[in-house]
Image 1: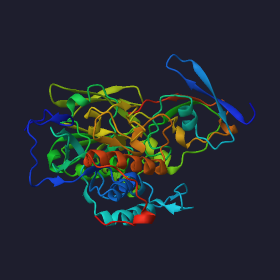
Image 2: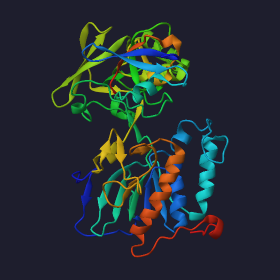
Image 3: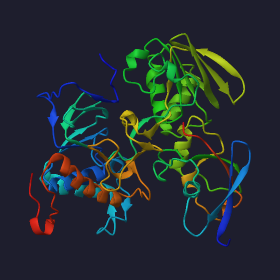
Image 4: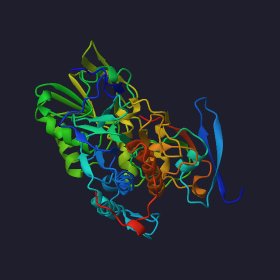
Length: 107
Length: 354
């Protein structure tokens, strides 16, 4: 597909399931995951205030630095890792091609 | 104290409404934009409303989280600041003189024999009403709990997520977990009281207020607190009451630390809270409603706005407004049995003050 990238969601068994993501709709990774029926509450809808869209980035190219809001939220999470991101703050674009994430259950 | 019915729908054998109770037609749970607009739609039909919210001010997330953000999808407003929308809604509902209980969370719902309800808040305020409308948005903000096995077993027995009375910790051994502002602030404050205080932080730096971070580092250098970076509390131990935690540094060595209290401070996360135990049909943390009138599975209880779910649900303020209007005409039939509902236009009738 043109104007689309593929990102992958690593399942508990290690399998990496591809998800097609259009780059021309201004979507976030959270929105794509939600649309693909992944169990990701994203309660606040993308304002970086609930952290219920928390993912761990397993593989990626260079990602944009987290904003202050996102960094602050990640820091306050008990189970975050160095590679944690809020998927609502990752905008789908060519830079995310091949991104591999693991969903982090809500704390 | 009877705790048997806390957070649950319970029936009273007699329908007794006390004098000091607030009495109203509709009790609206949640003072966000949709809850406020529900007052307007109810008011047009001459139904009185009392609004309860856990936050100290009306407006919900619009006031609490993004008062200065512009909203672009309110019909008739090309652009409106969230805070201004709330102010306008307050003005719009003023003629209907709603009453409010703010800063108190709704805890318990009692169904009366006559089909009416008594809503009870965290502070014990009681509201007698014929209809309950849940407009709770994201829910109420509750402490985020770290995933530690048996943690809940020690809640109130050494594990606490909030510092209510600092004196409780005087001359005690404390472990505070977290790296945000509240973890820093309470570390500084309690370091003056506690016998021994350990701050356990997952990261290597603090993003909180720089002065607080500096102060914590100084306290650690002076030996007044113990600061463990790149560390996590992994287990809690004790016999009935907490007496030790184990800590993993850099996900490796575990060591035990004797302590009287563990205070995890990891911020707040929105949760449904006590509403979860009311017997409402839920789907992924949202209340399932019938789109005919946004009624729930419990007669007399409606859910509108972000807190409800149905096929095609959109979490938009404007959808919540629509839901409020349909809810009101249905609630009218409960509050005025036998009377026929007739749609009246404000252009024809204006606003009749209540």
